[in-house]
Image 1 (tube, helix red, strand yellow):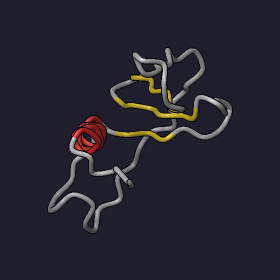
Image 2: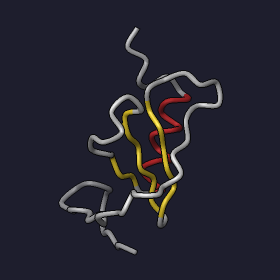
Image 3: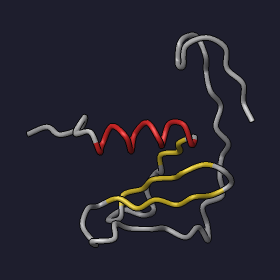
Image 4: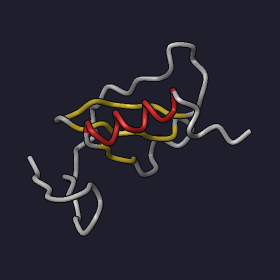
Length: 80
């Protein structure tokens, strides 16, 4: 794993591996809505656009993913 000192993201460049996403099990929303899919692979979380699966994927650490999910549940990303 990677270690960090000090506040998250301050003066630290976190390195994430180049994950082989071929054969990853991509999951969609349980309601079948939305345009993103996620895959849990090698201790990381990958997110991609369901309509463009050949495009780039975002890679999250478990801590980043947890912060994202908590923010989404709290309405942090509600732009309305």
